[in-house]
Image: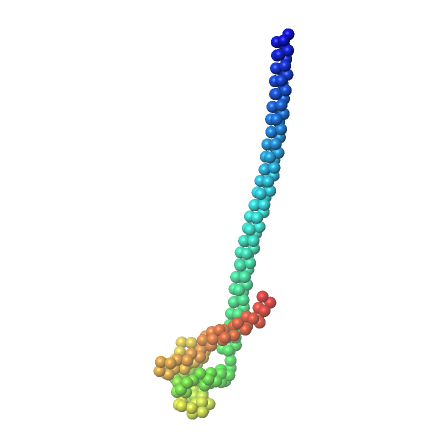
Amino acid sequence: MAIENILKRIEEETAAAVGEIISEAESEAEKIRKDLTDEAGELKVRLEQRARTKAEEEQRRLLVNEKLQLRKEFLERKREILDLLYAEAQKRIESLERDEYLELMKMMILKRAISFEEEIVVPEDQREIFSKAFLDSLNKAAGGKKGTFSISDDTGDFSWGVILREGRRRVDLTLDVLIAQLRDRIEPDIAAVLFADE
């Protein structure tokens, strides 16, 4: 009977040890499951945050690109509006009555002349309106300063205005040049008025 008691005691101790090992294994497994669940939760939070950050960055990038595109289109539209204004101004100047046109030319020539002996280069199709009467009026208005103006035998390849020429010096009073100078001088002011709400 002593052997049976020993075997029974060994069996009981073994069962207790096995139960303890199983209990420890279950406890360890539960801890591992909890740790994995916590890590999975943390990983999920990190991935969601990363995805949110990336989405926000992409949204910011798209917004910046959209704003840049809108700004570019707005600037192009402003340029079109200013171009229309200058085209309208040019059209009005070109449609001046003959007397107004000649008076304007006289004023511009007198203002920009240096020696008052310059040749006046005129457009081919306007040669007849820059007549002797115009020259007489111009020279009279100059008040006999240094010399007298003359109409050049050459004609210019332009449709409106004149070029003053003396030796190598030229003063371009054609409409294209005048509009370009006008643009440079007044465009900032016009843009400030037209686009003040920007």
